[in-house]
Length: 109
Figure (tube, rainbow, N blue to C red):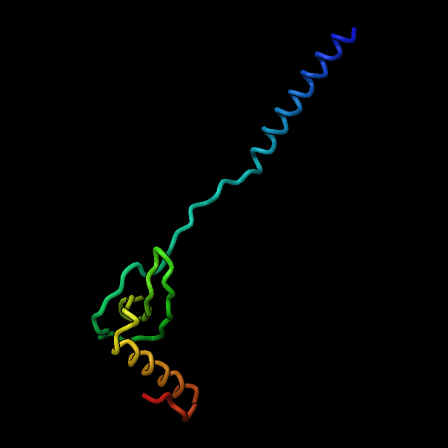
């Protein structure tokens, strides 16, 4: 009799473990793919469009260091942050923002 109940207990434990594994499978979420939306290369060309604002992107692979200028005509443009015209464009945008706020102190060139 003891042998029969031991075998029943083993089968019951296996069934319970199987049910737990199957039940937990529904709540398990696989990692989703992380997409990267950043500048992976930069341009040295001057921007001839109306720039509305900018952001500075730090370089962390696969992204590179960049100044992202946002234009009303074509959207985002990734520019090389080491170029002199980029620094001047940033100052020009900052001055425009300061003037729009009514701040009489513009950023010096």
